[in-house]
Image (cartoon, rainbow, N blue to C red; front, side, top):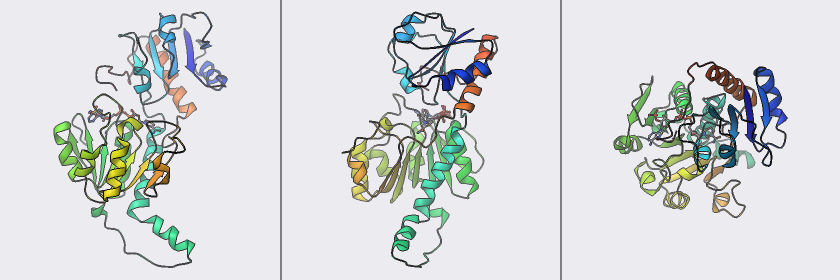
Length: 309
Ligand code: NAP
């Protein structure tokens, strides 16, 4: 079995050494832009060049080093029937749940106010929150959205979830499909986006959507930058419809130094760190699936390229 590692890491041995340990039956290669074909069976990739698929014509499957597959599907001339496999959780969902909880509590418990008071040596107690005033709506109920929903429901927040298909989740009110989006938004104050980027979800966080949220809304985007219409968010903040936003992903990354988001106190910016790829968990999952696929066993996480996730 031949496995080709294709991700622009300047230290590829950080990946290839553990791959060899986890998959001793494999010959492991690192992509060389000028090298010959190695006739790989499997490629482990992050944003691979189009040349990969022209040169390596014997691939049996491609394993993406992330949950979001939009970067891979954007590569031109992808072989139509080649299975693309995305990461499933691999330690990311718990990080996302933690990130959401932090952003939610910042808003619901008014933590900024206490930081301001501390700067002025002020001891002042504000009224306790009513959880009923902070209903959370999670867009996407996949590996990440479900874990976030469970975590916030455990803390007795009211949680709504929206996905393409029906889901039943304990203590979560679920909505399915585009025609239930309005109902979902109308009962949501804290909007959490964990959707994949597809043709259906691009630009979904827009003016019309913000206007349907409960007033004083909070928007937390950890999906992709292309989900958000940036000017519409600024407008919604200016009008007061959106009180604050926490953004982890951006149309252009790194976020340019002169981007207006940096100057807005209502916006919390993090540099795409809400859920990091954890090398050990990632490679354990991918090598386990490679071995299973090679042995003709079924594997999960194969992307439906038609629907885009
Ligand atoms: P997943 O398991 O594939 O779940 C995707 C969810 O989105 C599913 O519940 C799906 O509905 C729903 N969905 C897709 N298209 C929809 C549509 N048009 N309308 C309504 N719901 C729709 O994906 P995941 O592992 O949770 O990851 C989600 C995304 O998070 C990734 O694609 C990536 O973009 C992002 N992410 C970001 C970071 C970061 O660091 N910021 C890290 C990891 C992942 P069904 O359940 O009905 O299929």
